[in-house]
Length: 458
Image 1 (cartoon, helix red, strand yellow):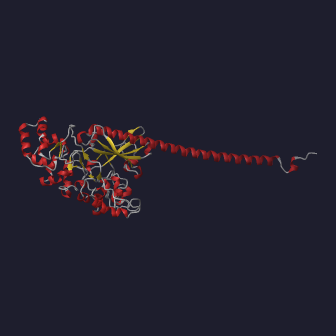
Image 2 (image 1 turned 135 degrees about the vertical axis):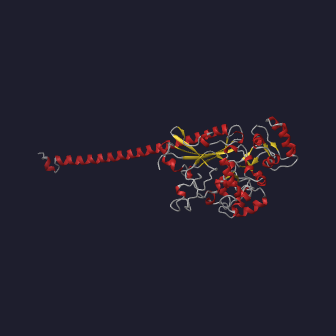
Image 3 (image 1 turned 180 degrees about the horizontal axis):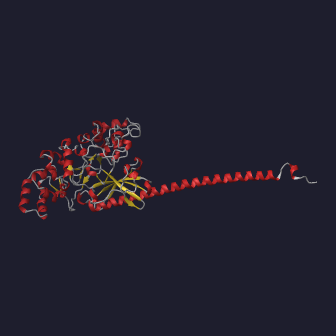
C-alpha cells in the first residue's frame, strides 16, 4: 500500500519552496555574473576609448611634426626665424588633427613683465636663442641664473678634450657609485647634463619640473605638492631652460654659395663684387672697402662697425658674411640677439646685465628693425658691441618643436620634443624626446577648454 506524500515528510508545497530557493540562487548568480561581465566590458570599453584617444593624440603629434617641418621649409629660409605674431607665418595653438589637437609649447623671450606667466606661450623655439654647452666660456656659463661656479667648471671639464683638464675632473667621477669617467668630448644632448658632476635636478629643472616655462599651480604652493618651491609667485627656472647643443651657422649663406670670410683682406675682396651685384652704388662700395682696409676682424659685428655700413646695406649681405676660423666654415654656438632672452643676453661679454634688458625692450618697441643685428648700434656702445661680436649672430638654422597633443574631451595627453636642422633644403630631425612623463604642460586654460575655443570662464 502506497503511503500518502505527507507521510514521507515532503509535502508538495515544501518541494516547490525548495525549488524556488534554488532558482532564486541561480538567478542571483546569473545576475552577479551579468553585472561582473558588464563591469568588465565597461572598463574595457573605457580602456579601449583611452587607448584610442591616446593613439589620436600620438597621431596629432606626428601631424605637428610634419606641420613644423612645413613651416620651417617655407618660412625659415636663409637663417630667418618664422614669425608667430598674429599668426603671420604659422599657427601654434589648438591645431586639429582628426578628433585631436596639438600645440607648440614655446617661450616668449620678448616678455618684459617681471611677473612669471601662468599660462604657456605657444611657438616654435629658436635653439640659437640659448647658450651652447659646447662653446660657451666658463664665465658665460657662470652668468646663467641658478648656475654655480663648481658646476660651470664641471661642464667645461666634461666637454674638454684636454687630457690634463679631463684627468683632474675624472677623479670626482671615479668616486661615484657606480664609478664612471668624465666624457672628454662635446655634449650630444642637453639631457647629458644629468651626468655632469654636481648637476642635480634642482639645478637643472628648478621649480619648472614639467619644463613648460610657466608657473603652474603646483609650482607655487610650497610643500603641498611636488616640486618643493618657495611659493613667492616667481618661477625659478632650471639651467635646461637656457642651454642647447644644436646652434650653428653653416658655411654657406642665404644665396647658397660659401660665405665671404671678412677675417682677412684676401677673402674680403669678394665683398666688393657682391655689393655691386646687389645694386649698391659703386662710390659707396669703394667707401666701404676703403674703410675695411687691411685690418683683421674677429667678428662680423666688428667689420660692420669699421666699414660704417648702413642698416640697409648690412641687411643686404649679413647672411653672406662670416669670420669663422674653422676650416669647414661652420660657426657653432653663436647666440641670436634677435630672439634670445634677457637672461641669455646677460651672459654675453659686452652686454651683461647692464644692457640685456635694454636690448629686449628695443626689440619689442622696434620689431621692424630686426632684419639683422645692425640695430644693436642704437643700444650698445661701439666698444661693447665689439666685445660681444664673436658670440652673436642674427640668423638661426636650428629650431625645436615642443609638441603637446590631446584627444577628444581632453584625454590621451602626450608630448614630444623634436629638434630640426634647416641647413639643408629640407629640415632634418636631429633629436627626438618623449616628454609625456613630465606631466601636463598646457596650462589651466587648455585643461578647462580642451577644444581650444575661446575660454570665457573665470
